[in-house]
Each structure stands twice: as structure tokens, then as C-alpha cells.
Image 1 (cartoon, rainbow, N blue to C red):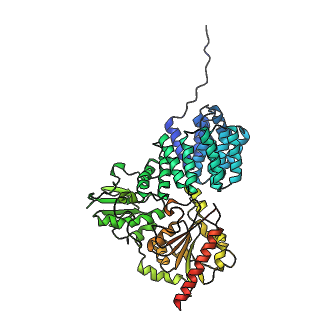
Image 2 (cartoon, helix red, strand yellow; image 1 turned 90 degrees about the horizontal axis):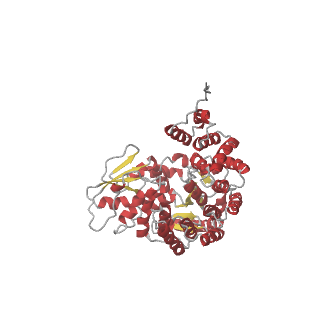
Image 3 (spheres, rainbow, N blue to C red; image 1 turned 90 degrees about the vertical axis):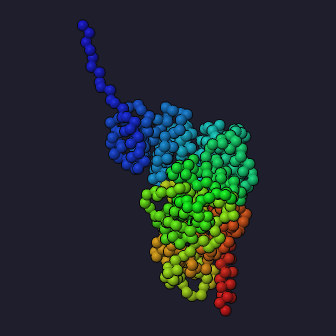
Length: 540
């Protein structure tokens, strides 16, 4: 007679709905409850569960345990993306790069020969601005995987971010020689060349990349930016629509996106919903197209952030200005950034002339009392943008376009000027430690919206700013602006020019060396000296 041996019950695996919910909670930063739910399944040899557990331990500052789990998953799939990349994708939006780096360091001790760990760590170090260590780590990755286009491109991008543009090109060109049909390398060479102002060479590289990857939205978008920087507006705006293939843009139906206007396009009576898409500066720049839209008989319905509501209500042609709420009825929708494409083939290709923004007359009188009335040149000052640490691209750009208030110390010694802060956000904290001898008036507590800032700007003689929304606000109001621009400047300021087709009152002072502001600040000081002398002469 045979005896039947009882076997231990098999522990069920959580279903995919539970695991998806766990990931959603982790993305929201709710690590502890997810860990409690998944811990009973910790002994299951399931890479998805082990990865989620590793993410939870990282979120709870248990770096060694997180690294152990994530490296164990990675070891079983040596050609797949390392789970450290999943950790980065989740924690960067939570502004927890330091925690990602701690897990990477622990992972490097466990698997020092895994180039994927070096790649993840180098990328995070680059985002943190720790360039020398990032470059060292990524060079190690390249030595571990000499044939990896990913490691080489990461190294080149960190070199470029540090400002070592020629060295970045050397790395990329060597990679391209080994992989001549690699579209990503071609595109990255184009990106570096574009930043250096070598636009024709960049465009040639982008065309080659597009030939290999015609449907790659990021390559097409990068191509569009270089076209615009070169002043090829019609083609650039058409190509710029590829951004809709990337996350974070419009979620309204593409079939109702407003078409480009031709000579016979009839838009009379059409309600056009104009939507906010990216930064406030973009919206302020493209408000110039509302008046031409209304002049053609359309009904512009602007859907904007609260900080822009009052200012937008005074834009000529704005039929409705909505702040918050639900999606209204419309015939067509058009993000602000698509308006230049809509008008590219018309006589309104550059929109309404400056000034197309108007300050509130009552507020102008009210805020005039916040500005010194001592006969000196009143200079509005902005030295930093919006860091946006929860985003990779904008955060890196902000670090290049912004400066420390101490860098502006030479302005303290310019005779005949008053320095008035327009700085809002985290960079405003630097006023607690101003440069020696700098007297900086600070009326910003009274500025609660762009409408308030516009009113104050009308009492200033000039605005001196890095590339922020204040440049567009002052430019759209028709006030003089000195733009302190970064080396690898935004497309809208073109290349090699000190003026702008968008704002006739704007003068561009650009870095000649990446990340070096001294020459720019010296030119600002000279310009303000001349303006102050001119103001004194006109008073006599």
C-alpha cells in the first residue's frame, strides 16, 4: 500500500492588476504600504515582484537591500535594461536623485563589472552636476563595453553638459565611425553641433539620422529646434509638431488640431481653444497670434494658468480666457506653441507687432510707488529661472541658463542705477546673501501674478534677465531688455545675433564659453553705465 505524502501549498503569485496598482502607488511615493503588501511574496523567484520590492526599499532609504534585490534581477537578464533605470524613472520625478545615487553606489560594490550600473550612476551624477565623477564612471563603462553606443553617448552628453563640447564630439565621432548607421549617435552629434552654433553641419547630421529612423519623434523634434535656431521657420514649425508623439503634450484629439492657414482658409465663427503646453515664457511669446486669429473671424478661447489670466484678458482678440475648469466646447484646438505653424504661410507669420501685451493702468500707478524715484536708472533683475527638479531636460537647461546672484557683483558698482529684483522662486533665497555693496530693492512680495509683474515692469527703464518668462513679458510689453544668454542658447534667440526678430527692444549678451558668465556680466555693466549716463543727459 502506497502512502501519499502531503506537499506544502504553493503560494499564489499576485495578479497583474495588483502589481500594476503597486507600481502606481510607488510612483506616487507610497512605498511603505506597497512593501507591506508584497513582503509575503518576497521568496518568490519573480523578477517583477523582486524589482518592486527593491524600489520600495530604495524609497524607504534602505539602499543596500534595494541594491541587492535590483542587482539580483539584473544578473538574471544581463542584456536587459537594469532595474536601476526603473528606479531613476520613478524617483527623478520625486526629486530624489541623492537616493538613486546611494542605491547606485551600493549596486556598484555588488556588481562592479556591470556596465549598466555605471551607466545609471553616471547619468544621475550628471544630473546632479557632479560632472568629474560622472565622466570617470562612464569612461569605466565604455572600457567594460567598448562596443556599447549607449555608454559612449551617455559619456558624450555629460561631457557636453560640463561644457567640454570638442571632447564630446571626439567621443561621438569615434562611436559613429564604429557604428555609422546609428541614428542616436548622429542625432547627438547634431545636438552638440547645434549648441556650438554649427547649424548647417548639425542639420546635415539630423537628415542622416532621420533617414535611418524617420519615425523617431525625439530626433525629429531635435531637428526642428535646430531648423528654428537657423531661422528656417516654416519647415521648423512643421517639423516641431512631432512633439505630439512624445508624452507631456496635448491630450486633445489630434483630428481637431487646428490646420495651417492658407490664403482661402475660412475660420470665421470657429471657436479655437488655445491651450497651455509648456512654460509661461512660451505662452507669453505666442500671445502675439491671438489678435491675427480674431481678425480672421475666429473666436479665440484661451485656457491658461491662473498666473496669466488677468494679463491674457487684455490681449486684443481674446474672446474668452479660462483658468482651470473642464475642457470647453471647441471647433479646433491649438496649443500656443503650434500657433506659429498655423500662421507660417500668412502675412502674420510673426504675429501682432510689439507691444501686444498691455499692463493694467491702475496697477501701473499703484506699483510705481515700489520703484525708487531718485532719478537713477531703474533696472529690473532676474538671475534664475525655474529649476523644475522633477524633470530631467528642463532641470538641466535651467542649470545652464541660471546663475548665482554673486555672479552679478560687478553691477553693484555701476554708477547711477537702482537694482530692483524681479526674481521669484528658489533663486530668490540668494538675496539673503547678496554681493558685497549691492543694494537690491525687493518688491516681489507684492507680485502675485504676471499681471502684477507687468505693471511693475512699466515703471522700470530696463529689464536685465537670464532666459526666463520675464524676458518675454518685458519684450511683449515693448520695454528694453538685456538678455544674459547661455552659450548653447534656445532656438528663439537664433545664433550669432545680438537682436531678435521677436522683440525689437531686446539686446542679447551671450556666453562665449559654456558656463562662464563673467564676460556677459561685464557687458551688462557697460551697457547699464551707458544707459544711466543717457538718462542723466536727457534729464538736464
